[in-house]
Length: 328
Image (cartoon, rainbow, N blue to C red; front, side):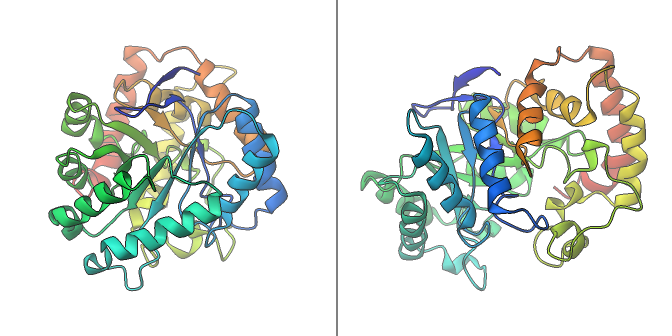
């Protein structure tokens, strides 16, 4: 894995990190033991970036991370968390400095630290991005030492473009994968120009791009790939990247033909993301140690050829873009 600066922050991170949503919840039954094993395997493989959120398992993900890092000791990886989704209802008016400070204080306790490395607004309503007082509040919390930096996790490219207009925003997290290619147009160009770190999430389209999901695959009742198939609980773009399952399965079979011999489709999909120079870190999740090690190994694949990249673009434009390109 490559190591490079995290935008304008004084952190050096690997280009593949650990996405800790799965070890928190909403992905079916994943035991704490498996979650700890997955995180330990990722760190053993050299990953130096962990992404979590206060709502992943109602703090379970943050607490597992704190416990694992305490047990391991030594140099800490960069840990990014998120705030805002604890609001009920999740409305722009809730993004007050007092509420955000309360969420941050809770994450400080869960992660057992005095200052958060990075806190990200967790896919806030668009109106929040037009309220400079929200970002002034984050500036004050940074000045107070509760956070070292802040960013925004977004659903839509337009929201990312608006977020990075604020000079204090050091990172943006966005869905980017073979099935969601729009960010590599204007957004990546602007982010690089402003030296904003890009965290690429949902890299495998909720497992579609692992090549292991079929029409017969059954998902547990507490797995978002079951209960959020049509956006019932949160933005449908977070589930299968917003691609209708049947369409996604058809596209997967075409992508499968491009995977180099000896490589997995998941590794190929992660390597595809790393071809974008604007991406600072990609954050695949892992249910167990084996998956975490496989994610790290994806960085060892040779760069993809121009022909392969062009073919993935053609598959996207022909099959996927009509369903997602103008939505996100």
